[in-house]
Length: 215
Image 1: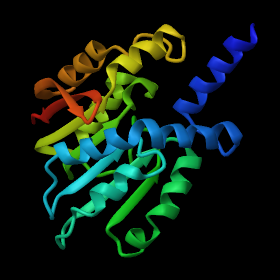
Image 2: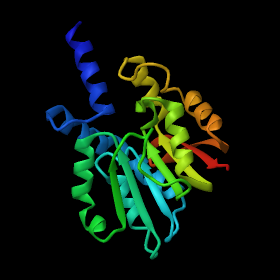
Image 3: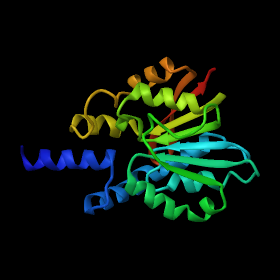
Image 4: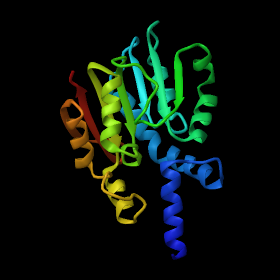
């Protein structure tokens, strides 16, 4: 295997599951540069209300958690987070320690396909640049549907041109990166009112996917 292919493979592995290492640390810097805007917009497009229970899937270093936590000012408002990477989990726990101590934030080191969250308990779900790293796309969307309240909203943000580029470079493997595959998984898991919007933030173009949990 060439050095280029080895580096590409290692980068893809760190994007999917960052570890406490120099490559993992560099990946967090990439997340801040590439994902911060997507995280903030996902939070904004969720239309979070003060007493909502909100879940971020694949929260990474915690930038989206910080944005969402500011909006949950009601006594019933609560923020949940799930990430498969122990490194990201520990980093976000440190970043959100004050809110965790107050009981406003609960973070789980968990796979999206088996979340320790009660049925029908979540109002809003958001994630960005996440679904193509799930081990089983349909299992992930089904588990998200399980924890959501009837009529709950899920918002996904991504820069699809970057996703296509990463797939062409074999940084993303398989077919789960395709937006059509994600939409099909949502639909087959019980989500309705699916739509994709093309949006801009400054000079950046990104896509927002919306779906409603029908039960």
